[in-house]
Image 1: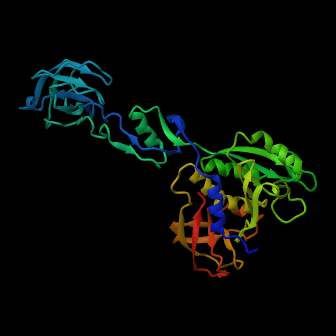
Image 2 (image 1 turned 135 degrees about the vertical axis):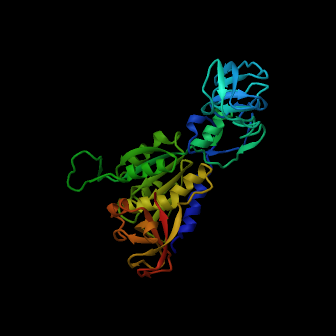
Image 3 (image 1 turned 90 degrees about the vertical axis):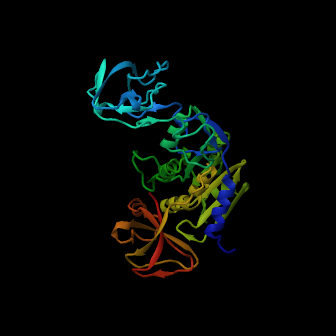
Length: 397
């Protein structure tokens, strides 16, 4: 059977995960989530005419021959509810954001006065409308202010709050169960016995899930035993949306994920890529399950290429791919025929748009991945590239 293309497997994973439900969430929980419906302004911003600065509310026509000295009839702090109309030939001291009283048509900033409290000397004139923020100047009541699909940032959350909205309709974060298999795995911080290694994939993939904006639940080390695998998953089946495994999907004798899921609706395939060829996807007890290879670079590259875009799409993001750029190689490299290769690299646009490969193609070279800020994508029909050749780089940061 010919290998599955990268594009075909990416689409299969995306179709499996699907869209998350829409929830009404408090604003403080919406940052980074995607708005699921348009927001129409329930009021104007500002909701009333207010002062743009500290100073004095005046009638511009009263500022004839300068300097002029006028009585201060009232003080208007921000938050004042009841106002006294401004009488001709008087001023009212006003603070930034305070409502402008009726009768006033301008504000003189305090720096242009002697800052008097009972009477004030005004040294410079202003035109009508000066230093007044009129009602609806920013947003009019009934205006569409946020559209569905908007990724909520601090400024958009702030706008919703300014409009008096306590919550917003958003697609919720998927809850992703991340588990690593392998009897050789032990927790960092404990002594290693011969034949054991410290577990890294679970921590790495859980971090990648959180970086994508989803919620990660990390299940530590499932041994290479089919019954133990099923038993470990059982408590989570009603509380997670997606299962992501690493390890146990190759052609060896102790491939526990493959053995445990063989009787379920999970398809194992060889994807035409390096690293990360062995992949699996399907459903386990109705839940989407994505099985990644066990070598750490293979697992992380697989997450970047397949899982991350699917998680972002499930939350309603329109932009699900990493930013890409074209760059020139600083050194040549080779790639296997018929497979899309993802090499690790360092790309600095300030250096003349040159990308430097980091480490070799080996799927165990985790330090090279940690030192990289991009993936260099080599198409499946290219087997050799020379220094200076142009490639596509996919940012990892």
